[in-house]
Length: 236
Image (cartoon, rainbow, N blue to C red; front, side, top):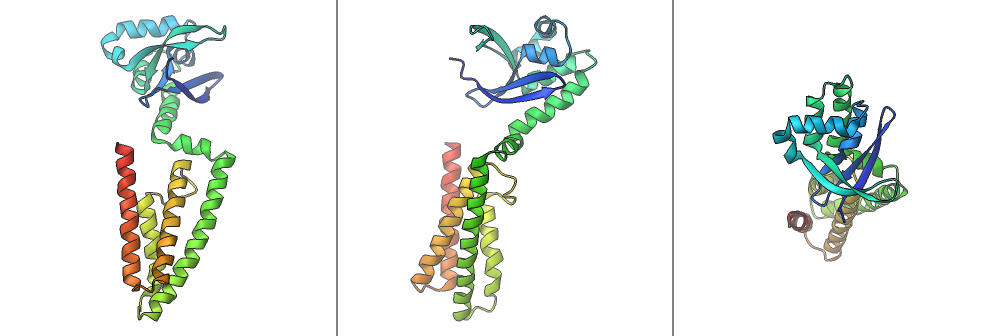
């Protein structure tokens, strides 16, 4: 069991480069594919020579695991982390080295930051359904905020209209998401949950005839607690 997950297939010219994640979240590429992308006639041997000449540098950026081959058998395969891939490009004298470095840097850093994950997810039906649902939930929340504004005016608020912006700034800060058309499914699910909680909290406050400032304060406190527990869950 190698605990590797194939997460991306990308084309560098005519070469298909597979990118893997291990269970620690490291991004890895095989020695064979790095060598092919760099244009070596004997990819394995050429990258091995680079590794042996720079062993002290590259050992810590490489791992050996068993990967399945086209013949159905598993073979020991050397893979390199992001840093290892970049170092090989630096040591290589191939004409393609700079072009491959520029390409693979954008690919691997995009995967590391999640931006490429977002682009991949945005092409799926599941992402679009979540995005559509978030729009519906936001409309419901907007209607609830309008009701809250009228409720606050009835209690004497002279700046009640500002609460539309105040509530949405609060939600955006809690979810750390300001562009919902450019986020992943995990964040969309978080947004849906936070919007639903805010909507429920406002409705409950109005139904209980509580002061409008207290309703907002309670809503803010509840969402902050959710934010803290979410951060603890991630760090734990």
